[in-house]
Image 1 (tube, rainbow, N blue to C red):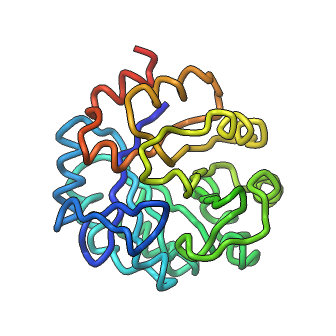
Image 2 (cartoon, helix red, strand yellow):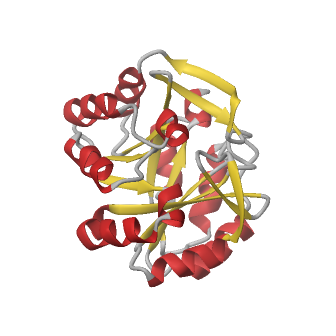
Length: 242
């Protein structure tokens, strides 16, 4: 299982939100590259970058940051936020993204999703973000009446092979994951998925690893790393069962 340190970019800075609330923003680095570089220096093997401004506006706003991070740090970077056209997806890959993460457009534009999957299936991840048990879109600002399990099943039928699952209600709260919820997601996903939301201690990673869900491929962590609740090395050890 892979640890993905998160770099969320808003206003050109590395930030974290609480429960997806853009008015509850904490700035951790004025330069996203500095945050990414610190994680790589500490041993990060992959990075998770989200363009929050892009997620809200509907088109990428931070690909220049992605280009520098991917170009200079030498680790794979998965990128999401505002990727709602095939052109935007191509621009993200051109900036150096190893994988792209689709959110809103995957649910609202079937033709777009089909075209991306047809061209980039192995490098495409769909983000399933939930509030109150239902999928949220548009940068977590709009809640649908769609259940996560139904969305995942539908996306798989369209050819999606990888997901990020985020419980937005837990995001930034540092209170730990809902393990029963993770098990339920694992039962639905036929490919692989990454979990995000609420990781606050090394023990949370130990608990996720102990689920032994073979399709749980990674855990995305932001605030807990920024606040030094555990180190990158300790995160690797926890997820590797050491």
